[in-house]
Every structure is written in structure tokens, then in C-alpha cells.
Image (cartoon, rainbow, N blue to C red; front, side):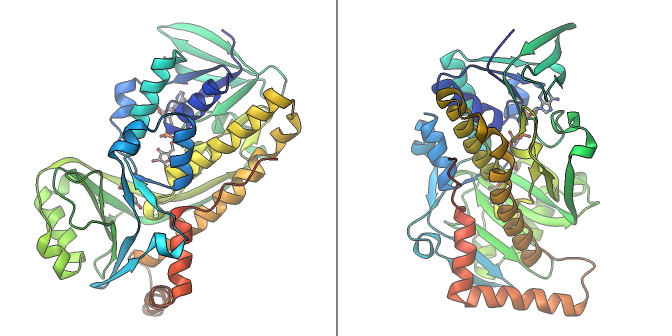
Length: 394
Ligand code: APR
Ligand code: PHB
């Protein structure tokens, strides 16, 4: 089989890139290890920056998002019981974010891909990239016990943090940057009305908590837990009690509780690999970088990588601009590091660090106080939260 762009992974990165390429008349095939149902069973983030919303519109996959997504013009910080409004719209000259679950984005992209007849191989095992440093890279993979070959011009490694693309690059060609945090997030999904119209990021002596949502009737709530906590030890009741204990009293009092539909613990990590390309293979999204979820940046960074790679490939095929190919990594990394910094900062400000001494805790509280009491500080938070601009490819 031969295609122009071979994509590994049918998560949001691979599907969105595939859709944009297809619309631009550039052929592509996606090889995905899992089944579609498995991909859709993963509950992930839910805050889309304007840049990602615009990109989904460009891909023509926006009808349900525009109908069902919730536009949020601000969010709240709850600091030791005190509620502070961050007016995203007012502080950024009118920018907002869209609340729409990653699972729904993925479902919409899958349906669009099926409707336009673009080819996806699900259940592709042992995918391996070859000859990335030549003009004729290719992928080998197995399906139903048969070994197959996909020839292409370029490979997009959209296969997430545990994928094969990054691992196929010789270790001496990559530099990795990593920080693992000594805690995780225990999250639940429940069919209860959100406790507040806007998201609430709460910091408290007992630890961080986040009240998010998927719709007017479905909530997504999190509490910080120790890294070694087991989800089996958290009954729904224990979760609700812990969450309420970390929120301002008025919010806790009006919290509607109910049975969880999903409950899981996610570790927190910052990770970047440089460069994000090797010959004719490009790393996109979680394959190249991970952020802790505190800034809601993971999915949005995947979208900005996709936008950059799409713009480059389009100019390569339409105008012969092969000079742009070597710019992919540096363009992406400038934005990636800014989102890494913001996610690290939000995490550092809002969580309880078990090993912090008294001095460090006072500095942490004071830095947060300073930012929320200063108009400049609130503006800095807001402009990062709505998303920094995408760099123009030229
Ligand atoms: N071969 C084929 N497919 C693979 C392989 C492999 N060896 N390894 C992983 N995959 C698939 C996974 O099954 C998954 O469907 O690649 C896909 C990667 O998807 P994600 O992990 O969702 O990564 P990405 O598409 O970059 O999505 C952006 O940002 O912060 C996060 O929550 C956010 O998951 C989201 C991500
Ligand atoms: C979510 O809704 O899952 C969510 C929202 C905001 C975050 C992280 C997760 O910062």
C-alpha cells in the first residue's frame, strides 16, 4: 500500500491531521493499534482553546461542538476558601474557551473520517517505522497474523506517550526533559449538575481540587491524591467528602453528589523531547510532550502541533516548499515550552507538595496571592489559559 502521509495513532492528533490533509487533497492512512471502541472509552480532558476550535472548524468537524459545546468566558480560583474570578474574556480582549470533551472531539473526527472514506487500519500491531532518513520512508505492521507494508513520503508519529514513533528514533539523537510530580489526580465523572457555572480550581491545605464539567448535567471533578493511592480505596462517598472539604463552604453546601460513572487516578508529569522530528518522521502531540493537566493544555498543544505540520505539508505539496520541513520542530517547541511552563506553574501554585518546608509553603501562598491581587498577574494567567497564538509558518 502507498500513501502520501502515513499516520501512526488515531487519537485526536492523528485524526485531526488526517482530516485536514484529506480536505487539502493529500492522501493519508492511519494505523491504530486499538479498536475504535477502545479509543472512545478513554475519558480525557475537556477545555478547548480558541485555536483548537478554529482548527476543528477548518477541518469541517465543528457542527456538534458548536451545538453542544459550552463557551466559558472565565474560571474561578478558590484559594483557602476565598473565590477569585479570572475574567478570561475581559483580560484577553475577548478570548474564551470551549468546554467540549476530548472523547466527543475524537468521536466527531472518527465519524468525519469514515464519512469521507479515508482509510484507517484499526488493530494494527507491531507498527515499525523504517528508513526515516531517506526519501522513501515506510511502515511495517501486522494485521490478522499477516505482515504488511505502507510506503509513504512522510510519517506522522501521533501515537501518544507510549507509542513507537519516539522509541524508533536513536536515543543519541534525542534529548528528553522530564519532571514527575509526587501526586496524582483522582477523577470522577458523574451525572450531576455542575456546582458552579464556571470551572473552579481550588487550592487548600488538604490539597488541590478541580470542579469541571462536560455539560449542564454531567460533571468531571478531581482531587489531588498521593502518588501511591489506589482507586479501590476511594468509595464515591469518600471522594465527595474529600472534594467538599477542599472547596469554599458555599460551594460545598450546594454540591450535588451522585454515583460515579467513571473513576480513575492519573499521574502528573511534565515531559518534552527535542527535536520533534527525525528525517521524514514528525512527532505530534503526546508522542513528543506531556503536561500535567492543571493548565488544560495537553489536547490544545496536540492541536497546535497538528496545525504546524499541516501548514508545512500543505506548502510542501502545493508550492514545493521542502525548506519548511526542517522548521517543524523549532516552531512547535517554542509554543510547547511556553505551555509546559504555564502547566508547571499552575501545578506548582495550586498543589500541596508533601516535601515542601514551611518557608517554601509561605512563598507558594505569597506568589499566588500576588498574582490574584494584581491585575497584571490575573492577565498573565488569563492569556496563557486561553492559549498563546499559533506561530505562522512562512
Ligand atoms: N501503533 C499504533 N497506534 C498506537 C501505538 C502503536 N505502537 N501506540 C499508541 N497508539 C495509539 C493509541 O492507541 C492512541 O489511540 O496512538 C493514539 C495516541 O492517542 P493519544 O494518546 O490520545 O495522543 P494524541 O492523539 O497526541 O492526543 C493528545 O493530549 O494531553 C493529551 O488528553 C490529551 O490524549 C490527549 C493528547
Ligand atoms: C476536565 O474537564 O477534564 C479538565 C478541565 C480542566 C483541566 C483539566 C481537566 O485543567
